[in-house]
Every structure is written in structure tokens, then in C-alpha cells.
Image (cartoon, rainbow, N blue to C red; front, top):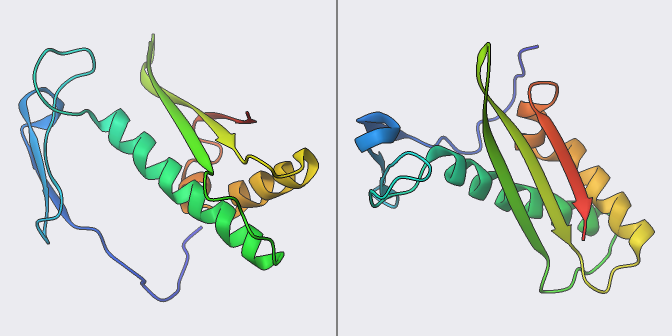
Length: 139
């Protein structure tokens, strides 16, 4: 289903060499990373780590938005540990994700409501909904 709306930001990157011996650079020069395959001795990160970092950062912002909408102040030490599995099956590679959310000092029922709302509004959650297995846990 196509969405229309105001473009807030467009990320532009150029990747050369793929995950094995590649580099990825953003058009504004703020991102300049070497790429490597998971488990490789080569210096560099891999797409799964970048995906985990992006999703967890976006998800934390979505939790903050959900809290602001409820006029709730979150603790400063909110943390999200993201785990992205690269899996291989007979039909090829696929991803599986776990987001482990820590909202210290927030009552569990309220924390769960914030996490549920964040999962509804987070752009990464929306983009992957129905495409990959996602488990979100309060820790």
C-alpha cells in the first residue's frame, strides 16, 4: 500500500564492494564504514549490525514519542539491546530480530503499553511487519 506524505529526511548512501570487502559512505560524509561478513577477521561492520543499530535507535525514539503522548517522563537510562539473526534455510537467507527493552523504574504494565505503542508507530517495525519474525521483550 503506497503512502503519501511529506518527506522528512532522505538518507543517501553509496556502497561499493558489498558485505565482503565493501565500504559504505553517506552523501553528507557522516557515515563512512568498512563492511565485512559476520564473523570475519576483516575490520568492519556488517549489514546486520547496522540494521540492529538503526532499528533500536528508531524504536527508542518511538517509545519516547509514545511516552510524550501520554505525558510521561521516561528515565534517562532507557536501553534497547537488538539482536539480528542472519539465517539460512533451503529457500535462502532470512532475518530474525529480538528487541530487548529496558525501561527501569517504569511500572511493567505501563512499560508494556509503551513498547506496544512504539511497535505500532516505529517506521522500522512498520517496514518489517509480516516480513520477518520479531520478538520484543521487556527486560
